[in-house]
Image (cartoon, rainbow, N blue to C red):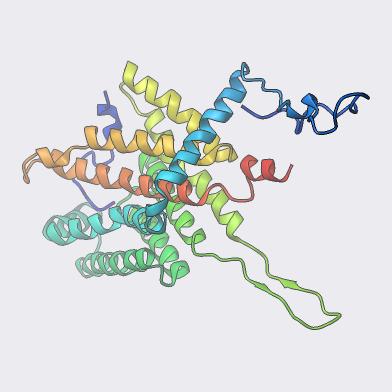
Length: 328
């Protein structure tokens, strides 16, 4: 988010090369006379009729198996998944703080010379960014005052967009909307439905409004914007086309809340593999401009992976097809 030299927001993406039918069996028509009552009726042993030839049902069963696999094999890690997701989510803010600190003179020179800000204002702006990003990110990780920390980090994203003249840059908007979506998901993870019951005869139960479902919906919608930036960037290839097709289907599934955990897991794995093999900033020398740019790309995508990890852990929430299927 801070200054990374000319063409700082040319996207690195350009370099990326079944449901059981009915319940029970056939009704018992009665036991004919002459047959001992101890022999069970054969009709009661017929199970549910399967329609396994239906591709849709096969997909439903496959995705359910994957979700069950995730729940079962990663159960020991489940208590730690929110913390890991939050750590990934705010990684880009920690990285930006380190960038400003280690490249202080370049940051001041750019804002003072090219953005024409007063020097005292530039110094105040950068110091404020470092302090707010460090404190607010830590508060998100340890789940303290999440509402304040989320608002502070969203405000930093907006202020940096204005300060660096990137507020209307397409790639900046799409990427940071995804980061904001992840922050909203992290905040929704801390909201617990507050129900107070008055144990007095004749008085109704007071049920406070559960706002978590709205934040989960907003977070899911915002989280997929990073992938839109990937779709609309240049340099098409066969591998890139495969990623776009699979990722687009998964993103639609996340938005509407259908097989959300499965779709989020697919997108998470897709982005993580892409990030490790494409944004390899560690292979370049410290003075190489590509290292600085790829490091920014790496931590931006890592933040989205953190948001997706929270979706895999929490699910889609009430406003989703998954939740409606449980009811109906």
